[in-house]
Image (tube, rainbow, N blue to C red):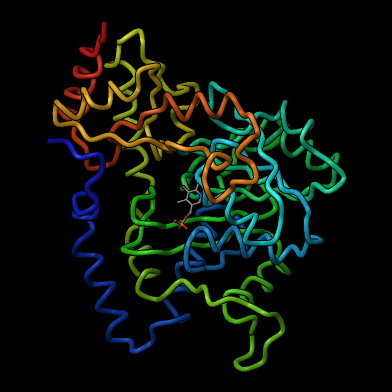
Length: 369
Ligand SMILES: *Cc1c(COP(=O)(O)O)cnc(C)c1O
């Protein structure tokens, strides 16, 4: 049996370090907004190459709080990729803003810069650049559009810990430093995962960072003095300590993912399978390894019959969800087709070469008549 993802196996190499970190927090007697959170914020900001990191409760809150902190007029529009995880879109509606869905590039599954411009109106205030599956969006043209139209860029980097973008005009930079602010999730299954919910914002905007530090803590900087009607969304000490214990190994774990990706890319020879884009193997961090097949559900059942667990990221596009019933008549054919065809094969640092070879063989054997 090869399960899609077994988190106990992924965390096993860190067990000793995690236990020490948890004991340290337990014994400190200080469990919310203390030394561990500050230390993790400092390390994660450094990793992303930005000045500020603000730990929050989860990835959805990270995105939502940035959009709230920007204080756009109610009803302002935010460009959102139509094929993203619903949390990206929820941040927009939770902030009282309107998502405008834009179709992805069918080869990279990322926001298609050529389609963004047509979606911009006088009410557009921001672009939500989702680095889906661990690959950075085409930031050069997106930045140009944002500058031309005076838009803010919020990166949804929840799947892109350590991902790089090679800009034609500047140096290669990390996800989390490519826009005005970036929302991160450390949900357990992410490339950098806590043992529960956790999130953060990274930014070079010191004023935004101050506002976010207040917004995550009831709108208060000084205890019992409240400047904003804020939230309670803090990264807690225990999760921060776990993340600090795992952070030094992120680069090695991403490298291991890339090694397995190379095995997949050479091992899968089934002509009916579309492989993910392989032009930036060493820049992308491969949160997921997503293939496509026109008979996806049959392939999934076939692999399941051979003991291989797979997932679909994602089975229903946000505009087809009950939660967004107002958009259900909108036609977004590229996204709808992707949602019918995508299948995620197991990919995590604990997976063995033999397991990947076994999965490739099974995928190659799938030939429905
Ligand atoms: C996981 C994820 C989120 C939400 O993060 P949570 O910590 O689960 O709230 C947002 N966007 C994307 C693309 C994600 O993968």
